[in-house]
Amino acid sequence: MDYKKFLYEQKKKQKEIKANAAKIVVKEIRLGPNTDDHDLNFKIKHARKFLQDGAKLKVFVFFKGRSILYKDKGEIILLKFAQEIEDIGKVDQLPKLEGKRMIMLVSPKKGVSK
Image 1 (tube, one colour):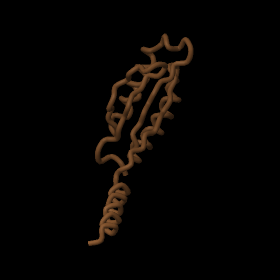
Image 2 (tube, rainbow, N blue to C red; image 1 turned 90 degrees about the horizontal axis):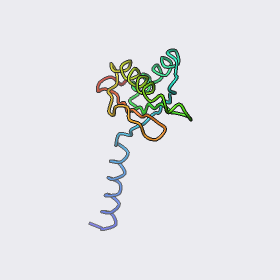
Image 3 (cartoon, rainbow, N blue to C red; image 1 turned 30 degrees about the vertical axis):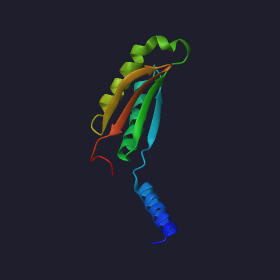
């Protein structure tokens, strides 16, 4: 067998494996510490659509300036968010403060996506 042909076949197989690999899409949803219920419901509706499409979610509360004092409000909003979407998504990482952002990761449950 020709060595060049062998290398070509190997490259072709690697390319095919890479093409068939599942691509993970991460969508971000940004909230504030004073987000109202209606706005939260609007964001939840978008989150449901993203999870049904099979994307992961990165939900975060962004604290600007002195609003960092309301860390507890941000955590409450994220936990309320998680509770609303628990039927189609599971929380991978509970709310955690990183700098000026409190981040929570959510992934779709198995068998829920289209």
